[in-house]
Length: 477
Ligand SMILES: *Cc1c(COP(=O)(O)O)cnc(C)c1O
Image 1 (cartoon, helix red, strand yellow):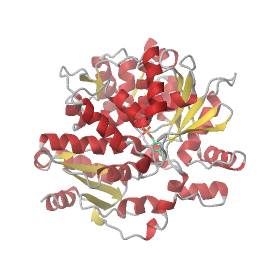
Image 2 (image 1 turned 45 degrees about the horizontal axis):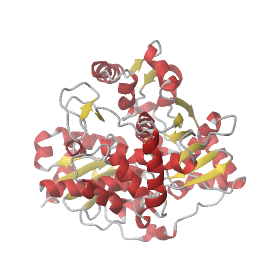
Image 3 (image 1 turned 120 degrees about the horizontal axis):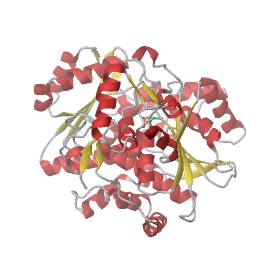
């Protein structure tokens, strides 16, 4: 299996090479040259695998279609080590439950940081440790977080050999629970840097450090952001697991609704559908930051500036530009790298937009790829959380509530086809909005009792890239 760039670069790479890289050299994103097809007989085998051997075995079967430069026994061991009941809280790893009627929820948020990002990041941590050891290399991960990504990365990399994490976050701006999750980690290879500024300042620092090529090379600076193909690949597995739990025969179809920001999670659904998984619709649910909904309704992709990116009560979807969207557009325009490059390197980079409304390819988004969309606002979120709790007895988080609200607009009217909403976080992470909706505080998993009172390991720093560089240099001995 070889990987290409969405912007048409001639190079082809293998999995372990792109694992440790960010963007392709031409600024594009990596995708496999083709999607392996799962036929009916193979899907039946996978159904057997999940039923008899469990999620880790299913993960190995899917991953091995895309990874041929790690020996099978090693890859199997990496999957077994990652997807355990101990780490993910249940034997099913991603259990499906009924909300009401044919509306189901796939739980992806029972990992160490209570958000779906653990599903991929935990695997990434084990893959990094494995590959760095094989190459006798080290990696210093520098990141910026407003909450979920940073904690998922830290819990995935803690104690891993060959890896250090330097995670910047805006001082005092994450929820108390999120701060406690990150800052209570005492592992020597994890460094929390609270920046006196906002999230954009943190991102600017990461960019400035990465643009210092000499520093970047000398200190082996890398990232773990959502454009990493290995993260996307790990997410493909739970679309299979969700489908297999919601059906009994391969003749059935299901739809998925996915609370979306950077288009990473739902892009994995697109890959699963291209592999032949019987998915009817892929429903993109956005919050007030509705860049993606606008595209799927109109064919116009118009990124928003920082001033037009709203701070909402589903903050992990507050994005102005969907960093994984280019992967889908590449497929939409018939895998034309030159065309994709023009749309993103010229359209988006120079004018902040492109317009496919008059292009025949745009019709394929719905007709051939199954995409539809919708939005949800603060009032919808509160009403949905309240309805699910008071009428259905289930407490859901703010992002999942956006998903449920939009999913209800796209249910199969016959009631036959299941609709799975991906649960992207647990309510405890966003307690203030749950209290606003329900007048009570959210349930807290026992292992997080008193987390806010644990000793904190964090340094506060001015928003100055030179200071961050000096800190990294100091801690790389
Ligand atoms: C990251 C995140 C999302 C958005 O996922 P994308 O892959 O960026 O679309 C939604 N909900 C929660 C809770 C998240 O942490």
